[in-house]
Image 1 (spheres, protein in one colour):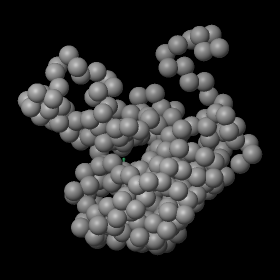
Image 2 (tube, helix red, strand yellow):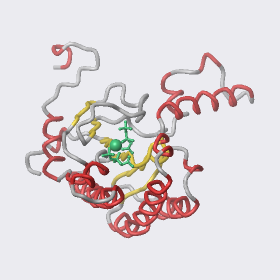
Image 3 (cartoon, helix red, strand yellow):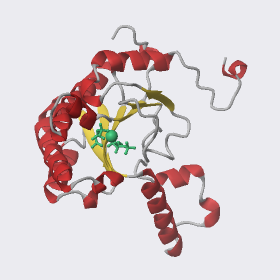
Length: 243
Ligand code: IPE
Ligand code: IPE
Ligand code: MG
């Protein structure tokens, strides 16, 4: 923890929490046991972020592509999600965490939506950290949806072609008002984005770690932040221009 430089913290960390299924298989368990264990890792990381002073944490919990998994697994994931939202509400209130969500929320199971909206509403005045759960989320879907809404606004006279800039476009995304992620972590040793935050991660620092999500530790997390702090983010400039 004290290895972290408080003056160079990433404002926004995003995580693709991958490897629950493989963790279960490796331990001779059913996939859902991996998801259950994964939820414990989620709690640990949220707590750690709060302790370090991270402003935004965005977690990829369920992708739009994940709807194509076997029905039994989807049902189990939805139950686990509902359970998580209910059990973590207190912790979020105590720790001044505001919950938000990105994705096609309408597609979620009713009971999940209910728990989600309740937690979002009850934590809405908190400002210690913003925790965003990406649920039924797809980056391409998000972009297409933004285009549709811009066209709709344009038809209704709310926006004109020449007004469409990168900044205005970003306002039509689910993540409106949030800074882009500074650091994006993917666990499980896969090297891909799997449709996560495609627009927002244009200049994000990426970190891929070969640890299955349920095994992801606070130490792994601190190591990654320290690594991030040693990188030079040039945004297209030369090193000399930065100093
Ligand atoms: C990530 O773990 C959790 C979700 C996608 C919901 P996986 O379930 O993808 O685990 P692996 O990749 O099969 O090991
Ligand atoms: C990405 O993991 C989605 C989440 C972590 C929620 P997947 O396991 O679904 O990704 P792919 O299919 O291996 O790319
Ligand atoms: Mg996976």
